[in-house]
Image (cartoon, rainbow, N blue to C red; front, top):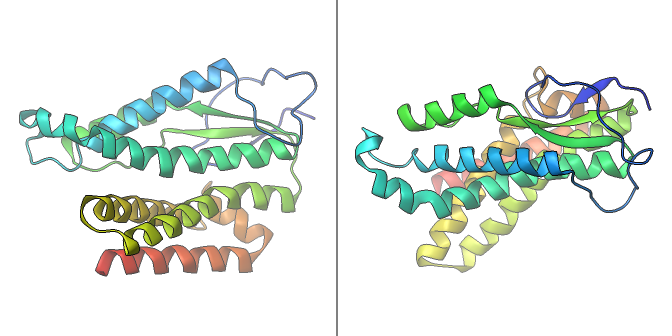
Amino acid sequence: MDDRRIYYSFHDLPGGAPREYGGGYPRSGIRFSRTEVTHIAIAMAVLTVAFAFVFVPRPPLEHLGAVVSNIPLSFLAIATAFFCHELAHKYMGQRYGYWSEFRMFPQGLLFALLLGVFAGIVFAAPGAVQIFGRPTREEGGKISAAGPATNVLIALVFTGVWLVSGGLAGEIALFVASINAFLAFFNLIPFGPLDGRKIMHWRAEVWGVLTALSVALFVTLLYL
Protein backbone atom coordinates (compact mmCIF):
# COMPACT_ATOMS: atom_id res chain seq x y z
CA MET A 1 0.00 0.00 0.00
CA ASP A 2 1.42 3.38 -0.88
CA ASP A 3 0.65 6.71 0.77
CA ARG A 4 -1.37 8.41 -1.95
CA ARG A 5 -4.40 10.05 -0.34
CA ILE A 6 -7.91 9.48 -1.60
CA TYR A 7 -10.69 11.52 0.03
CA TYR A 8 -14.31 10.43 0.15
CA SER A 9 -15.98 13.38 1.83
CA PHE A 10 -16.42 16.93 0.67
CA HIS A 11 -13.23 18.46 2.05
CA ASP A 12 -9.61 17.48 1.44
CA LEU A 13 -7.94 17.42 4.81
CA PRO A 14 -4.30 18.18 5.62
CA GLY A 15 -2.22 15.58 7.37
CA GLY A 16 0.82 13.35 7.24
CA ALA A 17 1.16 9.71 6.34
CA PRO A 18 -0.96 7.37 8.47
CA ARG A 19 0.37 4.95 11.04
CA GLU A 20 -0.37 1.39 9.97
CA TYR A 21 -2.04 -1.21 12.17
CA GLY A 22 -0.05 -4.38 11.68
CA GLY A 23 0.05 -4.18 7.89
CA GLY A 24 -3.49 -3.00 7.24
CA TYR A 25 -7.05 -3.69 8.33
CA PRO A 26 -8.90 -7.00 8.26
CA ARG A 27 -11.62 -7.24 5.63
CA SER A 28 -14.38 -7.76 8.19
CA GLY A 29 -15.53 -5.69 11.13
CA ILE A 30 -14.54 -2.12 11.85
CA ARG A 31 -11.72 -0.65 13.90
CA PHE A 32 -11.12 2.76 15.49
CA SER A 33 -7.99 4.41 16.85
CA ARG A 34 -7.97 6.66 19.92
CA THR A 35 -7.20 9.66 17.75
CA GLU A 36 -10.15 8.92 15.50
CA VAL A 37 -12.57 8.50 18.42
CA THR A 38 -11.43 11.86 19.78
CA HIS A 39 -11.92 13.56 16.41
CA ILE A 40 -15.38 12.01 15.99
CA ALA A 41 -16.46 13.05 19.49
CA ILE A 42 -15.30 16.64 19.01
CA ALA A 43 -16.90 16.93 15.56
CA MET A 44 -20.22 15.53 16.76
CA ALA A 45 -20.27 17.76 19.84
CA VAL A 46 -19.60 20.93 17.85
CA LEU A 47 -22.10 20.03 15.12
CA THR A 48 -24.75 19.15 17.70
CA VAL A 49 -24.40 22.55 19.36
CA ALA A 50 -24.34 24.36 16.01
CA PHE A 51 -27.46 22.53 14.84
CA ALA A 52 -29.25 23.25 18.12
CA PHE A 53 -29.01 26.98 17.35
CA VAL A 54 -30.68 26.64 13.95
CA PHE A 55 -34.24 26.31 15.26
CA VAL A 56 -34.34 29.08 17.86
CA PRO A 57 -35.57 32.66 17.31
CA ARG A 58 -33.14 35.43 16.52
CA PRO A 59 -31.09 36.71 18.30
CA PRO A 60 -30.22 33.18 19.44
CA LEU A 61 -28.10 34.12 22.45
CA GLU A 62 -31.26 35.41 24.12
CA HIS A 63 -32.86 31.97 23.82
CA LEU A 64 -30.23 29.69 25.32
CA GLY A 65 -32.89 27.69 27.14
CA ALA A 66 -34.41 26.72 23.80
CA VAL A 67 -30.94 25.84 22.49
CA VAL A 68 -30.39 23.46 25.40
CA SER A 69 -33.79 21.84 24.85
CA ASN A 70 -32.86 21.30 21.19
CA ILE A 71 -29.69 19.37 22.02
CA PRO A 72 -31.21 15.84 22.11
CA LEU A 73 -32.95 16.21 18.74
CA SER A 74 -29.89 17.90 17.27
CA PHE A 75 -27.68 15.04 18.45
CA LEU A 76 -30.04 12.49 16.90
CA ALA A 77 -29.89 14.29 13.56
CA ILE A 78 -26.09 14.53 13.62
CA ALA A 79 -25.68 10.90 14.73
CA THR A 80 -27.93 9.45 12.03
CA ALA A 81 -26.92 11.74 9.17
CA PHE A 82 -23.31 12.87 9.62
CA PHE A 83 -21.85 10.06 11.77
CA CYS A 84 -23.53 7.15 9.97
CA HIS A 85 -22.55 8.65 6.60
CA GLU A 86 -18.87 8.83 7.55
CA LEU A 87 -19.00 5.44 9.29
CA ALA A 88 -20.25 3.86 6.07
CA HIS A 89 -17.28 5.28 4.12
CA LYS A 90 -14.92 4.02 6.81
CA TYR A 91 -16.43 0.53 6.91
CA MET A 92 -16.17 0.08 3.15
CA GLY A 93 -12.61 1.42 3.10
CA GLN A 94 -11.53 -1.00 5.82
CA ARG A 95 -13.40 -3.83 4.14
CA TYR A 96 -11.12 -3.38 1.13
CA GLY A 97 -8.08 -3.32 3.40
CA TYR A 98 -7.28 0.40 3.27
CA TRP A 99 -6.30 2.66 6.15
CA SER A 100 -9.56 4.52 6.76
CA GLU A 101 -10.04 7.00 9.57
CA PHE A 102 -12.10 10.11 10.26
CA ARG A 103 -10.24 13.35 10.84
CA MET A 104 -11.97 16.56 11.88
CA PHE A 105 -11.28 19.84 10.10
CA PRO A 106 -10.98 22.47 12.89
CA GLN A 107 -11.57 25.46 10.61
CA GLY A 108 -14.64 23.80 9.14
CA LEU A 109 -16.03 23.02 12.58
CA LEU A 110 -15.49 26.59 13.72
CA PHE A 111 -17.20 27.86 10.59
CA ALA A 112 -20.13 25.50 11.18
CA LEU A 113 -20.49 26.71 14.76
CA LEU A 114 -20.41 30.37 13.78
CA LEU A 115 -22.95 29.81 10.99
CA GLY A 116 -25.23 27.89 13.31
CA VAL A 117 -25.12 30.51 16.06
CA PHE A 118 -25.26 33.70 14.02
CA ALA A 119 -26.85 32.74 10.69
CA GLY A 120 -29.17 29.90 11.71
CA ILE A 121 -27.76 27.45 9.14
CA VAL A 122 -25.20 24.65 9.24
CA PHE A 123 -23.15 24.35 6.09
CA ALA A 124 -19.45 23.54 6.37
CA ALA A 125 -16.79 20.87 5.99
CA PRO A 126 -16.52 19.47 9.53
CA GLY A 127 -14.20 16.61 8.61
CA ALA A 128 -13.85 13.54 6.46
CA VAL A 129 -12.86 9.91 6.36
CA GLN A 130 -9.35 9.76 4.95
CA ILE A 131 -8.53 6.67 2.93
CA PHE A 132 -4.96 5.92 1.96
CA GLY A 133 -4.17 3.60 -0.93
CA ARG A 134 -5.02 3.01 -4.57
CA PRO A 135 -8.63 1.76 -4.80
CA THR A 136 -9.81 0.48 -8.14
CA ARG A 137 -12.60 2.38 -9.87
CA GLU A 138 -15.13 -0.15 -8.52
CA GLU A 139 -13.75 0.00 -4.99
CA GLY A 140 -13.69 3.79 -5.06
CA GLY A 141 -17.23 3.93 -6.37
CA LYS A 142 -18.55 1.58 -3.71
CA ILE A 143 -16.71 3.39 -0.92
CA SER A 144 -18.16 6.69 -2.12
CA ALA A 145 -21.67 5.28 -2.58
CA ALA A 146 -21.74 3.84 0.93
CA GLY A 147 -22.25 7.24 2.57
CA PRO A 148 -25.27 8.57 0.65
CA ALA A 149 -26.74 5.06 0.36
CA THR A 150 -26.70 4.84 4.16
CA ASN A 151 -28.47 8.20 4.40
CA VAL A 152 -31.13 7.03 1.91
CA LEU A 153 -31.67 3.84 3.91
CA ILE A 154 -32.00 5.79 7.18
CA ALA A 155 -34.41 8.21 5.50
CA LEU A 156 -36.54 5.29 4.29
CA VAL A 157 -36.62 3.69 7.75
CA PHE A 158 -37.62 6.90 9.52
CA THR A 159 -40.17 7.68 6.81
CA GLY A 160 -41.76 4.35 7.67
CA VAL A 161 -41.71 5.24 11.36
CA TRP A 162 -43.32 8.58 10.55
CA LEU A 163 -46.10 6.92 8.53
CA VAL A 164 -47.09 4.63 11.39
CA SER A 165 -46.50 7.09 14.23
CA GLY A 166 -48.18 10.20 15.47
CA GLY A 167 -47.49 13.05 17.81
CA LEU A 168 -43.93 13.79 18.92
CA ALA A 169 -42.51 10.47 17.70
CA GLY A 170 -43.85 11.13 14.22
CA GLU A 171 -42.44 14.66 14.15
CA ILE A 172 -39.01 13.43 15.22
CA ALA A 173 -39.06 10.66 12.61
CA LEU A 174 -40.04 13.15 9.90
CA PHE A 175 -37.23 15.48 10.92
CA VAL A 176 -34.56 12.75 10.90
CA ALA A 177 -35.79 11.37 7.57
CA SER A 178 -35.69 14.84 5.98
CA ILE A 179 -32.17 15.59 7.20
CA ASN A 180 -30.86 12.29 5.87
CA ALA A 181 -32.60 12.65 2.51
CA PHE A 182 -31.15 16.14 2.06
CA LEU A 183 -27.62 15.08 3.06
CA ALA A 184 -27.78 12.17 0.61
CA PHE A 185 -28.86 14.48 -2.21
CA PHE A 186 -26.20 17.08 -1.37
CA ASN A 187 -23.38 14.55 -1.35
CA LEU A 188 -24.60 13.06 -4.65
CA ILE A 189 -24.02 16.32 -6.53
CA PRO A 190 -21.40 15.31 -9.16
CA PHE A 191 -19.05 18.17 -8.43
CA GLY A 192 -15.52 18.47 -7.06
CA PRO A 193 -14.67 16.12 -4.18
CA LEU A 194 -18.31 15.24 -3.41
CA ASP A 195 -19.33 11.58 -3.46
CA GLY A 196 -21.50 12.01 -6.55
CA ARG A 197 -18.59 12.62 -8.91
CA LYS A 198 -16.80 9.44 -7.83
CA ILE A 199 -19.97 7.36 -8.02
CA MET A 200 -20.80 8.65 -11.50
CA HIS A 201 -17.24 7.92 -12.61
CA TRP A 202 -17.79 4.32 -11.50
CA ARG A 203 -21.38 3.63 -12.57
CA ALA A 204 -23.73 6.36 -13.72
CA GLU A 205 -26.80 4.18 -13.19
CA VAL A 206 -25.98 3.71 -9.49
CA TRP A 207 -25.61 7.46 -9.15
CA GLY A 208 -28.94 7.95 -10.93
CA VAL A 209 -30.84 5.54 -8.68
CA LEU A 210 -29.42 7.02 -5.48
CA THR A 211 -30.08 10.57 -6.66
CA ALA A 212 -33.65 9.78 -7.71
CA LEU A 213 -34.37 8.12 -4.37
CA SER A 214 -32.91 10.98 -2.33
CA VAL A 215 -34.76 13.65 -4.33
CA ALA A 216 -38.05 11.75 -4.23
CA LEU A 217 -37.75 11.24 -0.49
CA PHE A 218 -36.83 14.83 0.27
CA VAL A 219 -39.55 16.36 -1.92
CA THR A 220 -42.17 13.97 -0.52
CA LEU A 221 -41.20 14.70 3.08
CA LEU A 222 -41.03 18.43 2.40
CA TYR A 223 -44.55 18.76 0.97
CA LEU A 224 -46.51 16.17 2.93
